[in-house]
Length: 385
Ligand code: ADP
Image (cartoon, rainbow, N blue to C red; front, top):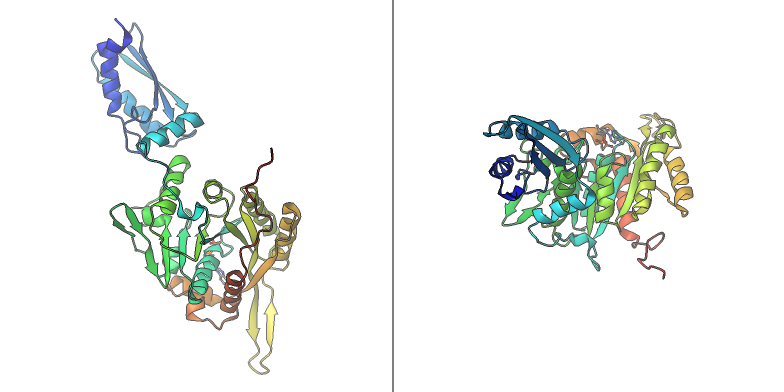
């Protein structure tokens, strides 16, 4: 009797069909995760299961689900589950089958001739004010009459909905299209909006993270945008890599602080973007100084609370690494109104546009909006030979 006709093997396959990958929520048999089944003479069922990525935190669940369903079968006396990891080819085959033969969804911003300027805002570490800069910059561009989309891809923080005053907003879905949330004159979507509730913690990683990103880029109806801003998570992780591949022509700004010790990690974030063929436009130094005005004489004084030079240092290092000038585009002072504006959903460029910090961000928006997309350092997609 051939193995295919062995009733016990068939029963095992059927049982395995009831085990789902907890994240993808499809049977592991459909996902190509079952790599081998055999039964020893003593009734031990041996199953090899391929995880989608190494170190999958749900491997314990998958293993125990498999053990559980097989142990119930008549003729199975013991279960031995071996866990492996898919190869890149196997993962790609799984992605293809998940798409049901449909072509890869198109990302409008990556199509030739697309006129939207894509700007990713990166930082080496958290807490430097990257999200505050992104949101205020988006609003400052919108104030100039430009249509602006904002993607909050900071999976660790996703503070953008709060800053825009729409903490509980969820996108409307029309047929297959996800509509971005309109807020304060921009269209926004946050990774956080994909969660069922805002306090839910999701171990975003690997293929799931990639799928969520692709979905936000391709299935969201962004319409005709002049600018598309992306608030990246800090550091040089999965998202930055993934976005680098999906949007290889994006411009990138690196946000840092005056502290020289932050310059190293900031430089790394910029270098990474450059390696992924993104165009590092320049550096923004946030929290540069505290500006106070003397009540009596009216003169202003700057106090450098966090030292100085971090922005210039990051700019110099990146220029050296990339081999062209990566300028320091702006220095944004410390301003308590940036924090309170964020907390109240009234970002500073709208609530206190005359503050020096708001003026610095507005000037940055003007600089960006009036500088044509340069070709400096850009890959012209020409290959030799
Ligand atoms: P990141 O996105 O880099 O983690 P955030 O934008 O969330 O940083 O900012 C971190 C904290 O610093 C927030 O409380 C924010 O309100 C505050 N903040 C950001 N920029 C400034 C600034 N220029 N002056 C005062 N507070 C700021």
